[in-house]
Length: 156
Image 1 (spheres, rainbow, N blue to C red):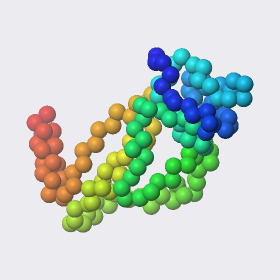
Image 2: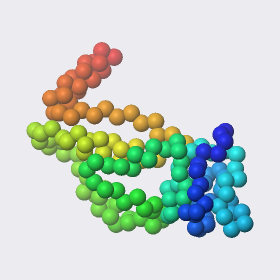
Image 3: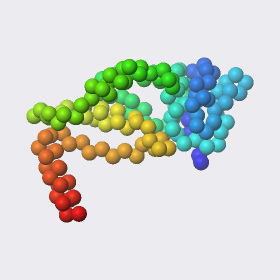
Image 4: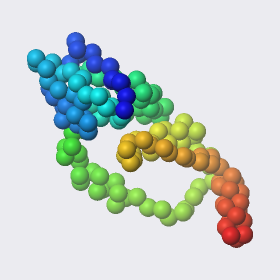
């Protein structure tokens, strides 16, 4: 599919093998006690870079600014499979409501941009994340947009 896409900084690599475990194409191996790229097919999914606790792997195809937010500081420590806070996730999901009880104020654009960045971190088929978002910052614009949508579907 491609030539080597990842950049591996051997001086940062602790040869822990986490990157090897998560690579879907098994492109990485321990060779003489060091991680080496030995594969032929890389889809630039970024799993190896995310799993590396030392930051030894960089995927130049992935924009590093995707993990930078304006309204908060993200914990960039990779969370290994099965080591998440299940009760916290359940609490978050159970607390989520769509009551449509809106307030009349414009949302901060930086917060909206951060929410979109968070949304694009969700997994997708083949990890291609072909997302499209429409950000409508004011209540008046939402109502206008809804009118256009209703008009379109009433003609169908």
